[in-house]
Length: 395
Length: 179
Image 1 (tube, chains in turn brown, blue):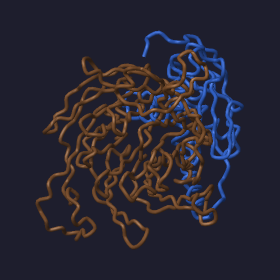
Image 2: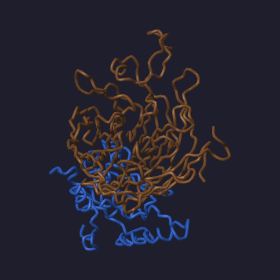
Image 3: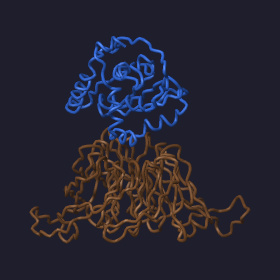
Image 4: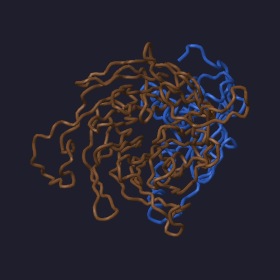
């Protein structure tokens, strides 16, 4: 087994494969359900249940034949878990909800799902299509409250939509800040701050000016090539990014400690929670606090989970063209430095054989913090768990 | 496509016979079939992977047509065997645009990528670059050619795929002699 570090990656399940490249996946935040999407234009849903002890059993639930005309590049759940958004190369965003399951005669005898509302066998239906992008839509994300949706495209734009009742969406802003293809969008876990990563090698952060429009308040520069994926830390004070330059970087909003003189070069910086107010007032700045450079090819995905060790900033998982999954434990420095030194606690080479891993994603549900999923170029989707190494023990 | 050619009078060189011992110039299709067999052999027999060499890769891409001339990439010296590097499960192809402002470079690179995608076992990762110093937008061309998402999207664009297919249309032996 490819164990390295204090933990090891354990394969838990192989989900039913897509018939073409699997690009992205998303765990439902409320229900035991995972969605994956593919160049085969479908979204596959699988449900899961805890069986005896430490195991999870997965079952194919439904395949949505989306109405998208091209690759479904990304999927995202609303925080309620009731709505699924799809981003497609056909330039549209699809919004999907499950038809109420009127027929209670469940021919499958789906006992696993007993008591899980909204998870019967009702069909997932397209309740809306957001049109606006001119070329391939590449990523979509719901804000933490579910009231806003962001999407991005090769047309260099980021769109912010307000989610209204009855599947209505109103465009709140079109942000044309990037000079190239926008690859990914990610909302802060509890503030209305949006991040986007681009083919122009930068990351941009946006907030809403209550008296005006959404605007970009800072640009994070450091990556030497395309930013493929971004993920906020669960606490919201850090942002991780994965790039074609083979690195994963971590960024934080830092402001001078109160005793730092304004003219002092030795001002002590402290990482502060980025709030909409502090961001727009500009009393600090975003800085790069870590560079992880062990991947051998492009890093296509990064996901930041809480981890289950109860301390620190959680676990960061990264994966990409070299096929190796890497898991990092992130702890804040004990001295006053704001630099982070994430520790590689586990890695798993050839996670999908010879194929690129396009997405890695931690399960966000309580009690599932050690479970993550990956999707790959051959259409396969796999589920994994992080366990303490038997030899090394935990920590 | 611009009505004006990027390079109206390219130098045309004569092509050589296939240098590969295992592939003749009219057998790209059989290479595909044979590699399919190799794959199944690999699955059944474990680690016996047949290595592919520089000349075999060259044979796959030499007959690709230039998008704006009735010549192959070999005849225009856009590709050559020494510009191909073969590693374990990794292939790097460098090509030389005929002129430094060649607007067709991404299309040529895409055609090379598609030909290799269709011909090689899936275990190969392919990187494609223009020869350093040979193109005024070298970084931008390289970046686009190696962005898998943009390549994937390009291959869902029917007019672009049609153009690539024309570049990949294999010359019949007669046509081959005519050019």
